[in-house]
Image (tube, rainbow, N blue to C red; front, side, top):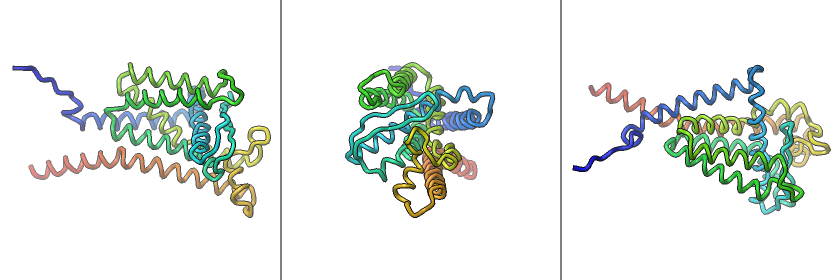
Length: 266
């Protein structure tokens, strides 16, 4: 008789989902520590650069979606960035940095926790996408030596290597940290946006101020920036909350209810 080996994850998906929930909780604690504990803030620098890359790439993606041309985008050593475009819908492109990052992080968070068996494949897919997007758009002068290009290619290759070689728990932990950090980019930057309503990069205004100036001309500049910044932060929180509910809580609650029903029947 043939010996048939069954994959443990297929036989006992509850066990794997509980592992995913634990890893998600650890990732959230890590993100909180990185942003709030001074002694470990040095580790935040590469994460900041990654989040800025996603932010500027989101501006560029929105430009393409709305029919514009992407000239390129840059990431600077201080963690700031800028995207250059020709055309495109400003009402979509301007919020896309923060809201696009929030969407990227929330969707990634949902996919990992809803389909945890495929986290390594997700890492490889994201890595390939980052390398391709960087080669196509992460430059403004035809040069391939920009920091944005370096971040995109190194991060992409790193994610591809992680997905190919690392255990799933390690891949899930890193992707969860990246997902939560990018999803909450607008929330973490609320104070900076409201306190820096002027130029943030030469004559380039921050996204919230630029949006308020163009689409809320009758509202005083400081008030408009505050309204926009807090609105974007609220949308980002709602996105991540929805991802948490449908990706984590709903499945976990179903398991708890099923276990309770089984216990009662006994």
